[in-house]
Amino acid sequence: REAAEGPVPANTSKGEAPPKTADELYSEHMQVFLLITFLAYPNLSKIQFESLDCSTEFEDKKYLRSDVSVECTSQEYGGFLVFAWLFVLITQSIPLLYWAMLVKHADTRLNPAFVGGSAQGRLALRRKYESSKELAPLKFLFIHYKCPFWYFEVVESFRRCFFVSILPLFPSAQVRGTAGYFVAFAFSVLFQTVRPYKNEFTGNLATMATHMITLCYFAGRMIQVDYFDDDDPLVGCLLLLFVLVLLAGAVALSWRDVGEQISNERVISNLYGELNKKQLGHRKDYAVAWLAYEKDAQATGFEIRNLFDGFEELLACVKARGGELLQPEIASELKALVKLMEDNHEHALAVMKTWTESVSGRFKPGPLKQADRMVQKANSDYSGNLRKVLDGVRATAVFHSLRDLDRAVRSLYQAECAIIVLRFKERFTAPLPSGYRDILMNVKIAGCELVLELQLHLQDIVRYKEEAHKIYDLMRLAGWEGDYAEDVNIGDATRRNASLNDLDRDENEEQGGSESGGGTDVRSSGASALAIKEGAGGGGSAKPPKATQVMPLGPMMESNTGLMMEPRASAESIVAGGAGGYTKGAAHA
Image (cartoon, rainbow, N blue to C red; front, side, top):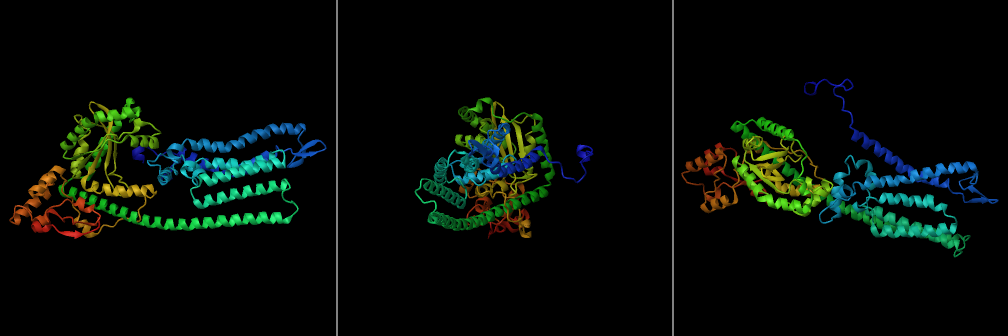
């Protein structure tokens, strides 16, 4: 650290954890503060409103109901009343504070935009954000509610305050009974109709609790109008019995939901196990593919360190350009952005294709991003700013070897390159937890103001991407995308046989090869092409028998049957064994 950054500060010892950032300190202390206010709010409200209740009268004088030694018409009480109202206003602003802190994230994180409006999809997206430094202190306020009801704890706070603190201030028992009954009935209908709680068990209990409160106020009002004899113990017994019946019904309904929930959890657990097994399989595929690239680099004398050095040099060039990464100002409107993409689409793809082919890559154009997807991404990630959506026009360049990828990366910071890199993100130095590696770039080209997306891939890694991404999407929606049951183990036989596949051909070339019966890719790696040619020659035939022709491994690996072509051990083994060096076996994709 001293060599890289200078002397260690005097107040920081070696090996000591770095000091917490301002954001981390804010998150921790704000959570404690909000929890204290949440727990103190009901009692504070009750005590403060009791200091305003002067409903006790004696000899034409009013006294404080909670303390009859205090006369409400005295001068001392008049001075105290000013501070009492001040603290009432401060205390009642606590739920408003919750609402103000939550509403900033309402449309982006608490109730995020989700195509199709799926409730499960919204919950999955919310789970992605709820542990962020902005929402972590507020998590206890919304975690138990469905996404559209992120604010419901504020409503609940005011409901409790009304029954405990405000209702006792009403002038007469009859008014209090009537008001309490109608408010309780309104909340009964509300809980029954909107079902704001995420957990059905909690929702049922909350609904039954409001029904019981409504019943108690109704019975109390009947006693007030002499409908029941208030001295008859039978009235109290019937009321208690009815409440117990309601309570038993709530428990029965909730228990039924608990059983259903346990059954659902069992299904979810099985689904999780299968998806995790698939994801672990893809992790192994990526590990074996990268091992093959390492072996190929060693066999051809290429230093992988050179590739990482090229990453650093290109990144340094990108940082030197600086500036905020945005689409042009005209693209702030959706229609203008779509028109700009359509006008520049063909030209941009043509320039990127020319560059890709010049560095021995295979070009794959991407479709234009749909307008609704751009709006969704802008709302969920960029607070509605369309200028930050940079992948409307996109393409992919696929390379066969690390040497080819290194050549492509180094060409991008040459002065004569037609592609200008504005953002560079490589996932080779630190791959994803799945082991997936690629390069993501945002670029510009001459004569086009639009910011484009260009991805660089290695063929034997990207071949698993489509199937693996489907599994990843399912895992991400369930909140499991970072879960891997165990580390993958690569056996010795797999390590020995790991080798690169031939470079995939374009569709037209594949069709031509099939019609001619050749099946050999002229752009394959030199060693593999030589091995095939020599092996065929050694067998005395112009080409291997059709049953043993070279086949790309990707489609077989990605099939649902789990059968694939067994990777060749080495070019030398093919030369030695001729056409017989190609064997078919069974293995997990």
